[in-house]
Image 1 (tube, rainbow, N blue to C red):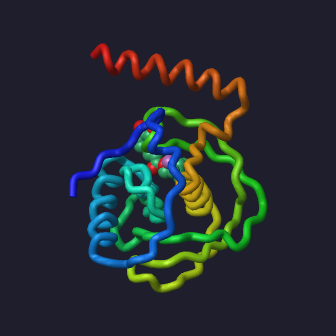
Image 2 (cartoon, rainbow, N blue to C red):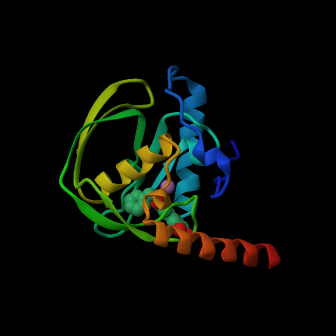
Length: 173
Ligand code: QAP
Ligand code: CO
C-alpha cells in the first residue's frame, strides 16, 4: 500500500473523519502502512486523514528518553473519545501536513482517552506530557482541525505569508 502525506492547504485535511465500524484486514493494512511512513518522515503522530483516509484512526509513537521510537511503543488508536481533560500546558507543535512550521499551542495537560485497538477491543489510556499533547493534536485532525487554526489572527497571517513563500520556492526549485 503506497501512502503519501496530504499537505496544507489541501482541502482533504478539512474532512471530518468517519467512525471505524469494521475491524478487518483492510484496516490492518492501512495501519501497517502508516507506521513506516511516520518513521521515515520523522513523525511522532499520524492520523489516517493525513494519508487521505478520512476514518477515525491514528497512530502515535512518542520518543523515549533516548529519543528512540521502538515499535513496541507504537499506539494504534481507533474511534477515540476524550472522557476527561484538565490542566493547561504549552508546546511548540509541528505537523507532518504542515512541514517546517512550529508554533506554541495551548493544550490540556492531562487527558483520559477511551478508544478501540485494531481488533475493536475497548481500551482506556491516561496521558500526560507529550503523549497527551499528541493525542489532542491528532484528535483535532479527525475533526478537520489543524494546529495552525489555533493561532492568533496576527500569527496565522504571518504563517500564511511564510508558507506561501515556501511553496513558491519549492515550485521554482
Ligand atoms: C503531532 O507531529 C504533534 O514540520 C505530530 O518538517 C506535534 O509528528 C504531537 C514533523 C507536536 C505533539 C507535539 C513536522 C516532521 C513531524 C515537520 C509530527 C517536519 C518533519 C510532526
Ligand atoms: Co498533525
